[in-house]
Amino acid sequence: MDNPGNSYSQALKQIAKTANSALPLRKALNTVAKNTAKAIKAAGCSIMLLNPQKAHLDIIAAHGLSDLYLRKGALNVHKSLPEIMQGKAVAIVDVSQDKRAQYPEAAEMEGICSILGAPLLQKGEVVGEIRIYSHEPKHFSQADKDFLSTVANIVAIALEKSELYRVLKADHEESVTKRRKLTETPKLPSSSLRPSSFSHTSEEEFAKLLDFYRIEWLYEPRSFPLTWQDNKVTEMFTPDFYLPELDLYIELTTLKQSLITQKNRKLRRLKGLYPEVNIKLLNKSDYLRLLAKYGYGPLGETKVEGVNQVLFSHTQIQRRTRALAKRISYNYRGHQLVLIGILKGVVCFMSDLMQHISLPLTVDFMAISYYGSNTEPAVKITKDLDTSIAGLDVLMVEDIVDTGMTLNYVLNHLSSHSPASLRVCTLLDKRVRRLIDVPLDYIGFEIPDEFVVGYGLDYRGEYRNLSFIGALNPELIEKGRRE
Ligand code: PRP
Image (cartoon, rainbow, N blue to C red; front, side, top):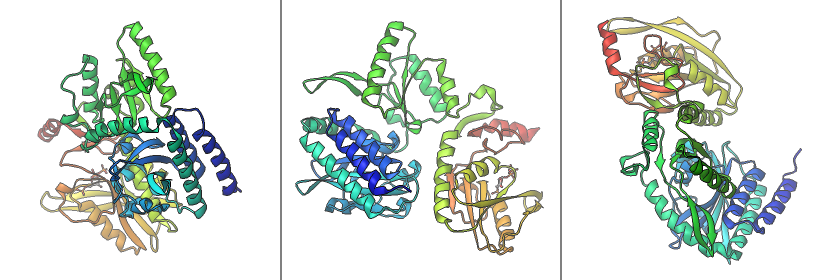
């Protein structure tokens, strides 16, 4: 069995060595963040400094966190784990339930369940914080807290001794001011973030393609310093796009070989200085291939002529499903869970959801059909459960709740079989169309009144095999009604 004391002392040796190395400070701190997360077996780590007014904490180094999470906004020292400012190490087991988490939604989207934080102290005064982020619910031990506090001390000394500290701070404050302007807008892309013109038509075309797929994008949001002389930046690189959802920078290329060589050189340097940054050099023919890799189309290959726009990409669905599964795994720990789905729309969601639930569970399916008139519709069961649910914890899984009629009927039916508990998880909630009020415990996305297809959902039996969820062209539905 692992001896945590041993692995922590090994990790501290490595962290002290990195902090005391000749590496540029920011790079050294990113490596410290990486080794700290690895030692605690956590998903990520951030190192933050207090701003001069001592009101906010800004991230200066990080590991394992998406750019979207890093851009969520500065942390208010009074709202976010305020005890750390009093010099204490603080642990949060379930971020979604704890008022001391300032951005619980951003944390949920990132899949963060637990946080451990420790203050950076210089001469007894708090100057910043180091935080650890876990994707699994984690009860941090005293050994974990002691380890993180020791790393915090090493970081504080490294900051104090660094000649670059002052420069880094000034540079950081300037970039934070710029970044804040970006983070003030929660939903991207927004018109205020759109450039009035692009430098090249290929960039404009790429932006249109991203818009169709509803992939969030930022145009030239960040410049990376590449070379310095006397603490002054002498060369920078500004990638054309940043896709927060994929945590990916994109640089588009022209066909001029001389420019490609120059860009490749800059890119190699950028990757060396900022190893955590994910960047790709693309030419036009690479667009669709890249997007397909991330689960977007290409459109021509599937039956999607009637789809107006992608509402939720495959990546978005997967991320949300993982976050739901994590909450379910935590809430049902120690229970006998049965997942029940209603055929057929639920197949994709059920398949992905169950794979991310880290508990022993069983699965069953029901099938129903509708009869009656438009004014008095009714539901009947055409396939009932295979096994008894008496005394078990049942979670109904639905792809979409629309009028609520189906779910209401099925919940009544299941309640009569005496389960220990009965809750509902739906990927989509079309609340605006609800006729019967049904309680929903886990919701993937709330959607507007649009006809949605893909990822299991159909129109006249088709479109179920799309990897994303799209909105169907209303004209197609109208035409279908006339036929
Ligand atoms: C969908 C979905 C739900 C139901 C929700 O099934 O799977 O079960 O509609 O609608 P409601 O809230 O208005 O009752 P659908 O009838 O399309 O069959 P399918 O699952 O076979 O596609």
